[in-house]
Length: 64
Image 1 (cartoon, rainbow, N blue to C red):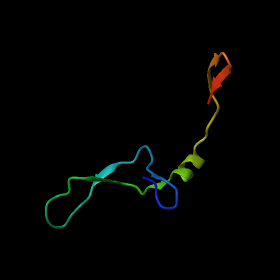
Image 2: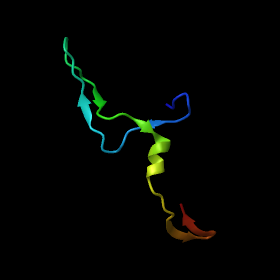
Image 3: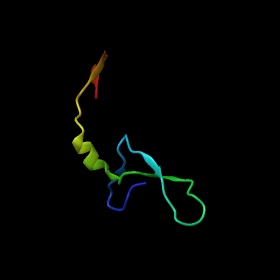
């Protein structure tokens, strides 16, 4: 689900899920991410992309 501003929030690939601590009551069963999420736009800006061609089709090379 995207946020109101139109930017999705994502976590890095190596994020560790940690158990949240509580001072009273039963221990928590659900895990929470150990890092803050960042916008997908900011994460994609850090990544480098390159064009690849995997085969030549009838209408020319197929590439992305």
